[in-house]
Image 1 (cartoon, rainbow, N blue to C red):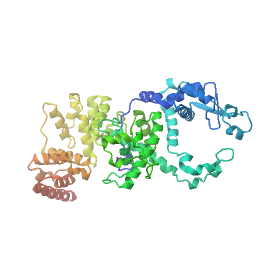
Image 2 (cartoon, rainbow, N blue to C red):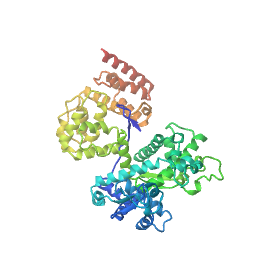
Image 3 (cartoon, rainbow, N blue to C red):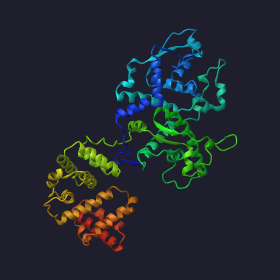
Image 4 (cartoon, rainbow, N blue to C red):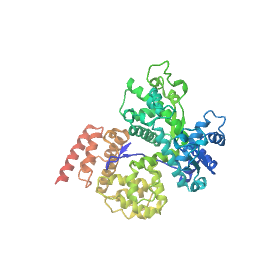
Length: 521
């Protein structure tokens, strides 16, 4: 993950998303929303509910049958989750009623419809949601998802209190809220939510940078857990570290089993055989032998990947948190300056697609003029803008030739214009002045160096480029230091660091010194 130097907020790689209509279709097909819609229709005429909007017997059993889950051992639990989702995302509205059978405390203690305290019915405004606006569908789905994510990050009282839970109930079997010391609980709500956000962020980042394609390769849970918990420069895993990874893997398994039905992700759970048996093992809760597993074995520890709908949802959450999460194609309507600022930050395939989409909205010659105008500038980012300009211009045919000929005498653009024209076998291309040749060489090197960190300067491809551009002109270092380019000294210093020939490297450093001395006069 890179950082934006302007404000140090994280910047994610660009993501590809299907159309809003396709995302809405996926949301409607998600098991949780699909079941919620069926239950909302079932509740058309009103259904008695408990104090929290929950279904009561015998209507709960009827709802299970409505979803055809009567033979499923988890049918009641699945139905409850779907009903809660319908309530949480507004498909069903609950109105409190007077009810029957005593006062409110007595009604809340009851288990049947005689003790109902509310009436739930289908929300009229969302009755036709499945046939409605795509944005509205995604909004309803997102509302329900936020509640599910909040619930996932909130442990149950059983998980928090363990054996102490029994003492929290009164003589009627009701939980006594006053008996719970919230300050004494070993639970940090903000930390839990932050951990879940971090997990989703890493799943997003690893998905968009998947070499096989966005989100194509499922991630084994140990790899995801390690990426969340461990620094990037971790080379050796301690026993304590492995226990932390193991414990998080178990938590991820619990989370993802719940989140899978939302349509956020696709999940293959952990094989039961690798779960640790606490009765026979004194080690902390986790999974067995995770440190000894090879890549093939890791798939047995659960695999997960975001769906396109999941990428959409996580991107929306990150943007709300102030994280820049670009979308491939979103620059098509932006000015050329925005396009050029972004292109060199993108992977080659993403940059090409972004430029193609931008050009598709414009006529060739006017598009070329806009690009060339935006590429000018003596500022430090100028070389990388011109590099992006060359990338975009390379996608244009001869229809753009008039725009390129217009800048042949421009000291900053004349060199790249000549290269473009010669590559297309254009006639009557004038040879460049010597100063323009050296200026273009310095600009090209400055652009390449500007897109790499100091650690990446040792990359063979970059060293080969530097060496090739310098060696093709034996007088380059003797002449280059006089070039009127703001990056001349920096480029020559980089040549001095990177060129494999010691003598030429020394000569480059001397040339850099001359360039700085000349600029200071």
